[in-house]
Length: 487
Image (tube, rainbow, N blue to C red):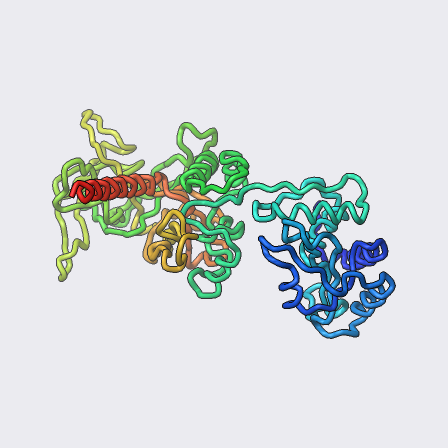
């Protein structure tokens, strides 16, 4: 099972199976056109009509099938069909096509073959050749199980005979998994490729930073269903957080930097602080050095000039704790010509090194930060759900694309301890979320980090608000109907 296998590996055996079916009277070469075959097949409510070639002699069908392989006929001149039941209520069992002529270059066999097996024929017989015991398909293949079993019985497949089992497709909220629709997203440029971190492909999930263990845990969490449903995307995000929480180091990254000048800290000096790589509830150990300097960066949203109630971060005259560092107080706000906050001038309390005050005073807000001198510039890509609606398969899925599914912060800063880590390394950016250094684009002179998942399910709050709003609208419509009824 360590090898990649292809149906084309078995073209010769599949051809021999076709010959075997003709010889036992279970298949025949039909000379109807594709359109004629379609009209002869009938409808769901009307039985099909047998082809005039259905009773073609075995020797004649064998001769034509061999000549089909030899390339004597044009595309569409003949097909090999199973002889089953043209009145079957299962349309698939109305003498399905097993082989057709198609002159096309095959990416593995080149021009060696000009006849190719159809899916239903190749599926079950390839399973048998490979020793498959359980062939797992999604629910749309329920009706195909009849031809799957019929073919295996007709060719007298050896034990263990494969069996087909159907299950519901794993449909996620805010996601599509149809290959046809995903291909359109790629071809139309809505995503950068099949490995775009917003795509529900394995390569996309890998580039986003999702581990194989997280995917397995998610599949175990949702189980296997026999009825179509749409799984809450929060379950996948939970499985990802639960996995990464126990394995990735913690670091600090400022995505939208606001400069802070510590006016009472000496210029040109650095105070190297020790910060843990993992919290106390993770059974891993390690520390990293974090430089504290006169000039720092904090998140722009961690400061407000006129803060509302319950805003516990930095504001004029207010004190906050720098994570793993000191208490600082905002003394002055410097603005640019446009009136925007450009810089904060603060003082620090040297006695609070490590985050606690000897005099016992408490600070409610703790924020992350990065040294302006030692921090490394980087690009942070915030990937979010690709669609705005929970079920984008309904209606025009392109119209439901989320315009904010990718937000790029090109001028972010990350602490220097991780600057030399190889691409593909995962982290928790403290207070922000889980990230991975991009394996395609990140390099030493231009670090790039992709968001895997946020720390909290902010979408759960949004969804709750949406559902409440929908409920209010529905209630309002109900009241209007009752009023019209009374009139």
